[in-house]
Length: 131
Image (cartoon, rainbow, N blue to C red; front, side, top):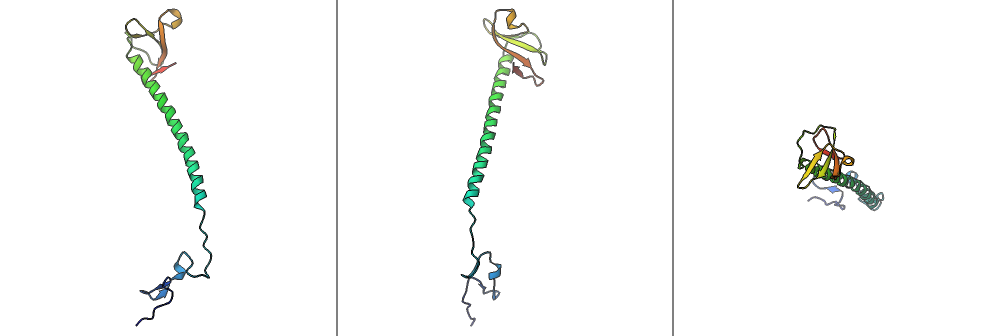
C-alpha cells in the first residue's frame, strides 16, 4: 500500500515527486506574497485611447463620405445636363437652368442673365468638381 503524501497540491502521484517549484504560485503559507496587477487601470487607459482613435477615424470617414456623395451628385447633375460639345479635361464650365432642362456652357455667368447652378471643372477621372 502506498503511503499518501500530506500535501496533494504539490505531490504528483504518477511520478511520485514534489512539483511545488514548478508552480507559478505559492503552494504554502510561508511562500512569497502574490500580488495581482491592477489591470483595471490598464483596461481603462486602453479603452480611452482606442476610443479616441476610433472616433477620429470615424470623423475622417464621415468627411470622406460627405465629399464622395457631393462629388457623385455634382458629376451626375452635370452629365445629366444638355450639351453639344465634348468638354476638355481641366477646363472650367458653367451649369445653367434652362426653360425645360439644365445645360452646360462655356459662357460665364457675368456675361448673360441665365440662372447659374454652378461652376464645374472636368478632372482627369472624368468627374465634375464644383468650383
